[in-house]
Image (cartoon, rainbow, N blue to C red; front, side, top):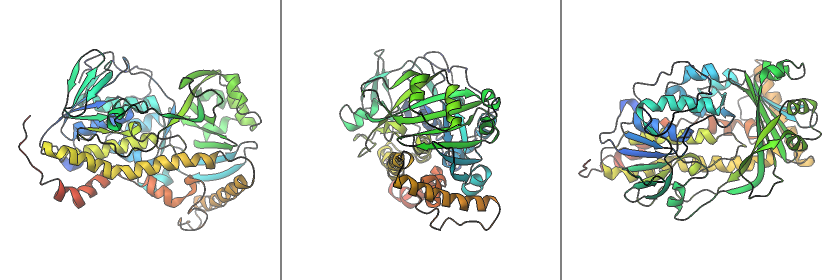
Length: 480
């Protein structure tokens, strides 16, 4: 479906492999009563929600405030709980083409580069959780979801929502146009406008006091340096843990680029812009004394972008009292980057919404289905939001007794991981070296909960246990 406002997505993305969208989702169900649904926001969560709702049989329009949809962001981690959904939607070949499968997670000490933790990922993670992990450039994933949704969805750019009446619902655009809908999904991110209407007042995110530098380097410059070559040749997620800061780095774009994210205490005032270009010298000042490879990597970066890390407390509800507006992704549960689950939570939200609304047969079911969506997703998203926030403390421990205890536990878990990788007696994840480990990546129980989750299975299970008896019988005369 062609864009009705504004130019299309910028072309500076990678990947040409054929997308093979499924002929059907949700066991072949499509809503008996199609709705006119507006999704506010054309980010990753908005595109995913629009696609899922369209596949459930609804007419979906995306309203995006930007005039163009360009290449933004840098690298990101896709854990098995999200790649299983992307595969199900027909994106497996495109991911294989542009993404990089990390073979392991390697955590290192900031000043020496000593390995503190090594966890086998790659095919091992795929066997354990049913889907592989990937590293991907955000723009490439966005392009995939755009190409997936666009044939089924009306995508309108340059359509900034300035106000709305959630009870009808209608949305007022900056142009003066009024858009009518049966249902509105607010997927407009951390700076969400639609969130204000759910909360009932202006509700702004708060600075955490931390920021992140982000940079992307061509891997050819790393390959030319004997000290850095292995970072490309052995595709791992490498993290360096230091006092009040850490660095995460990995390959993206079929190993053509190397992504570096550097989290640190923000020395600038809270009112400063959220995203600014920063000098390389200022960036290097934050990592004085770090191991030689870090110093070499930073010397290759001519300039960098700095993002302030913003946070929000969990909402009491994601649903407006009218039952015609619901929030999704960062609009309701923004994630700090310390667990790499932000995009996963938004895409899981989208999958559950689509699955539930494939059952719709009456307008009287709209509000109950939205509350079902919240019931399925709220605890998981809120728990993930909380442990993402708490994980910062583990990553940023000052040198001293707590840091030494953390490192001892990580080394013990690494010994178990290495035994398993060598084919020795498999460690079953029930011992003291992984269960309750201070690093969430080392905790097998937490990983099983996080990475083994299947959003569609959870929605199907909820419908069988509750929806069929509680929502299915609801039927009132409906007119289009």
